[in-house]
Figure 1 (spheres, rainbow, N blue to C red):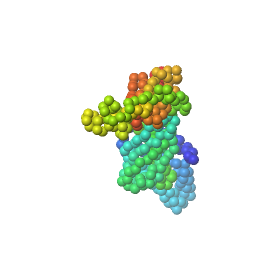
Figure 2: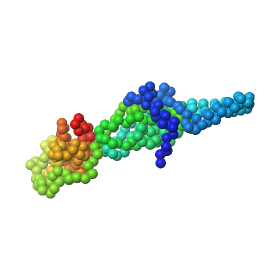
Figure 3: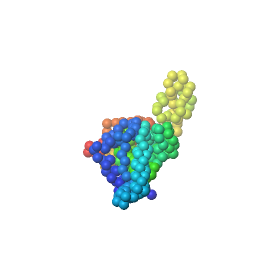
Figure 4: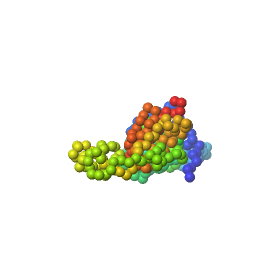
Length: 328
């Protein structure tokens, strides 16, 4: 269960939105946290301890109590050192790379960041996105000169290229009396595939009438029973002897019915709303992949395929994700 942010943490978030605070504009990687971009404020406990020390100091001065003064100055020095050490816990930390595999809108995105600890231990440092929970840096970054990958979960809502927003590194170590933090906004955006239609009609041409068509009989390796190799054909269908003789890859065609190429046509769904068209085509792309069917995607300004496989699936889903909004 996530902890409720305290008042000073909300103040931190408000300060991070001010124009003069670094991290407002997108920045390319790598990024090194230096003293100019690290900020420190007391935590709730730090404010309470500070008030108590101030009260002790005023009381000792009022009653001319030297031991009380010494204790007050000692506690003030400890608080000061806690603030400095919290700042140093972030200083020199380096973010070198980030990566995220595309997901469909509505799913959680796993953002992976590569960090280098530099010359100091990073124990107690947390990473948090503007929308999402904080995660602790891995134990491997507690050692100096180490590097490690951190995974951050970010919710997605819309298709397209998503701005990651501000990411925050923060710590309250070692004493919990001060919070040091640094914001930055990654320049890199991540791709979010369209949301999938929950239910709907099957693939075009999936019915038994015409979904499959007979091809040439499998009788030897004569060239009139073969065709040129196409991207997505299974290696076991390659006729190696004929390919060597003709100096190009040839593929056998069999008498058993072979699935036709599926046409996924934007114009054929003109009766549907804009986003529902995209959701249905995205679902059909995945269904065609599951069935091992070659498919062609035809959308405004782009035609992809026919082909199948991970690269073609990604190209189709990317094209659907980057379609303009309705009315744009």
